[in-house]
Image (cartoon, rainbow, N blue to C red; front, side, top):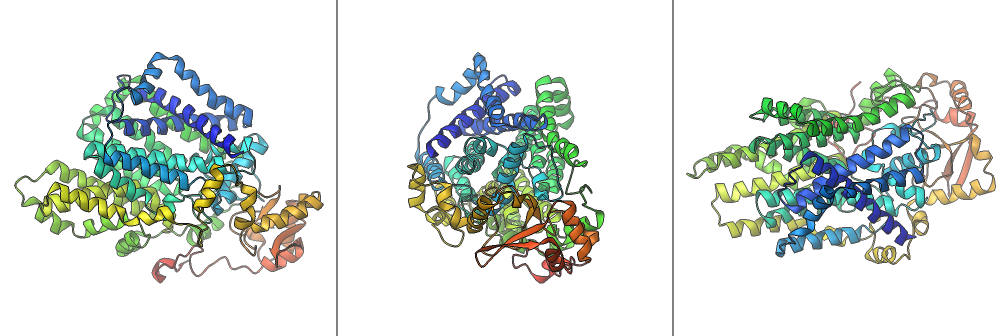
Length: 631
């Protein structure tokens, strides 16, 4: 079965590549590009936007079935009929590859990364939200459905997870294909970083920048561990938007400005948490243009660029149209009060669960916010920002002071700082969200180290290159991490997946032991489960996997509205809410046994719940001032 999933993934990548090359050639008929890595990264990102848009459209017209999804993916190969598209693909191979040490190092690094991620998508968030969402879409044949006894997280935009449905439709319960999709997004981000830094500096610096991105536990094993998945599509889109805005400025290139807008729009098709940074990056991208009016006029006159921007806007808009048709609000549950989600509930939820920081808090704890997440690139950026006045004085004394380079350094440092501010102003400082800016901060780090060593301390170029590579290598041991508390895959398991000897059913008890308990009960009496809901929080031994569970309703104080908040603290009213949703029993695992608790008993147990938490629900050991909640 693993071999079939590998094959399906290769077909998907080829289809996306074909669509992406077609998009790139459509937007840029001249076919010019800086280098192959950058061209391929941009093509894969453009192709992903188009293919995911096609799949999302099928979900709105009730055609979200495996046959239709694979049909529309394969349809993208029709682009190859055009000689121009075939020529565009041929550009990747026509001139050959000029091999050198850093390029070989990049390929080895990507190969090791790919090998260590030959595993299954097993993190909690994927099984509770992303895989589960795609499973539900496939079961309903559409994304247009809603219910109070359903985890509301399935309604948030999740652009990066749509391709999971291709694997789930063919191999239900086997999330190897979805994990390969996670890897795919990270490789796109790596190609963009390598290509751009190679273009700006050299391949040694490009390799160092990629190492700063990948040598991070959250990034390297994203999804292939118990706890964490990083949406690397956001990483790629954010970086692509940023460098295209800058390239549009320095090269006076409206095509690059168009690309920046196309990629930028898709940020809000991925995560609400990047909304403020989306706005900030747009404003900065517009503000830095010396010829903004010329760019806008060029776009208005160029039907291809205009079509590309509107298509990207349309694909992004499908997410909000979906929520509007399903729930009555285009931004449910973030700002839309539907399905029992009321204003008062939203206010408390935003303080206790989302927990954004105020601007004074962000300014006061800015050093802490850059250092504590454990991202080497962020630490380099903050040290540079902290010492910036001194470094500026040292640099400007040099006769050959490069003003253009200094401006570019300021751009990348500024974007990095604005990213931290934007993320923290929208949501609590979750270490996962910080990784969305890791590519931007990695490139900012390369500029920072180059400025410090070359322009401030006048060190020889070879020595500077060696120091940058050594700094980037500091996290190399992540490549050989195995097992441990996060349950990283072992090398033996990677080999077993590659040889088709290990499957998800062999690992289910390790990551989701309670699912086996529930499955046994379900097989004995599936009818009883029609009036059952499971408590998303009250599970000993870890959460249930929504993706691997039999069909059941869900109850949770924070993430469902099966129980109206107006019913608290009245147990009888809570019981009535449960019965109205068809829930007679609430199940949870206790002492490795499945307990069926009558609705009234469950209502009594939760009736006195205190919504006004003293500190953040997700508290990762923050300072008291950041974690305490004020109502």
